[in-house]
Amino acid sequence: MPANRTEQVLARLADLTPRKIVAELDRYIVGQGDAKKAVAIALRNRWRRQRAPEGIREEIAPNNIILIGPTGVGKTEIARRLAKLTGAPFIKVEASKFTEVGYVGRDVEGMVRDLAESAIDMVRHEREHDVEDLANDKVDERILDLLLPPPTEPAPAAKETPESVFVVSASGGVTQEQELARERHKRTRDKLKQLLLDGQLESREVEIEVSASSMPSFDLAQGGTPEGMGNFTEMLEQFLPKRKKKRTVTVAEARRILLDEEYDKLINHDDVVADALDRTEKLGIIFLDEIDKIAGGKSEMGGPDVSREGVQRDLLPIVEGSNVQTKYGLVKTDHVLFIAAGAFHVSKPSDLIPELQGRFPIRVELKSLTEADFVRIMTEPENALTKQYSALVAAEGTDLTFTEDGIAEVARIAAHVNARMENIGARRLHTVMTTLLEDVLYDLPERGTEPVKVDGRVVRERLKAIAEDEDLRKYIL
Image 1 (tube, rainbow, N blue to C red):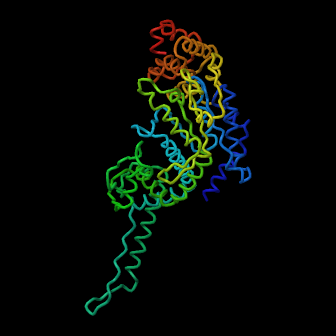
Image 2: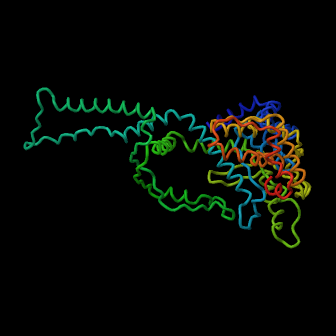
Image 3: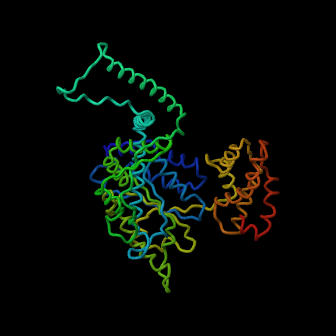
């Protein structure tokens, strides 16, 4: 089963040619064609590797990539959209958060454990979707039993003795009474079920039994603990008796609790783990951000630079391919795709240790965004900022529209501020738009449903004082 499931995911990749992948990324990310092309080829090569002869398949290494460019140009968004597109296990980690083994903090193997957890969640969600209808039916029946317990059956008659005599009327009165009770219960249950399906009983309270933790939770899955000791609490709880406690909750809350229980009954956890680990090894993607923060030599005076090279040495075997112990078993990282990213303002990729440089053979430089790019970012993507703010304002029953000259003015101010201050790329659009629409969003509930129109004149009037005052611009924009 696990292999078949992974094969189904790989089969979906067969339709994703590099051109289609780039076209999908274009829906959300403006420009950066070189980076999109590189990740599209790397992704397609994963499918190609699975179709290669078995003798050579294990020898084909993933095309690990370093994306080089300033903040806010789309490095993280490319990797995130790529993972969503393929349905592959994906995590984003920051290299600066890791420490060399022996120091207090997270070790680099933690990212592989996080990737396995991500795959477990992904596969379980797929399994839950497969059995969702059946689970909901079972939950409805359990809630009905709580709202209307079944009629109690009479106790079985004791064995006849000379002292006990059982008398039944000629018409079978006892049996008829039971049948009538069952029919009344069925009619009432059917009415309740219809009310339940219509959502009219969600606030009704019921009493259910829930599992109570047998011991306090201790998370030992931190850096510095021995391999295999992660999540020590779960291991101990397997040997402790399960305790139950009664809680009074609403039907809506009971449905959530009972649905989790039904999913646990219907889904084979071992199958989920096997599938997830298989998918992690074949399709996993780790986005290693801020890799430039661990580049460079050691500081002469010690300090935060002292373990940079140590983190690189610890990272090297993971990227090269090794077995990492997780609480679900060993995970091989030989074919996990690593996409690293960094601004490299102070350092450069050649400052990384040579062995690590060799494991990232593809380097792509992302271009800084221009004023024209800002205009495209605000209009072309499906999740463009203008569309997001229009949706927020529409929630209050008001229409928000942006004219072409209004968008152009916002882009001009964002580009100007980036040029005069720190260049934070497209994130500058967020600060400009938030400041521009602050009063509108604040007064929206009281101002009625009169449409809001943002043109060039409105943008200049509202941002003029801030844009011209260098101190204000520094703090606000």
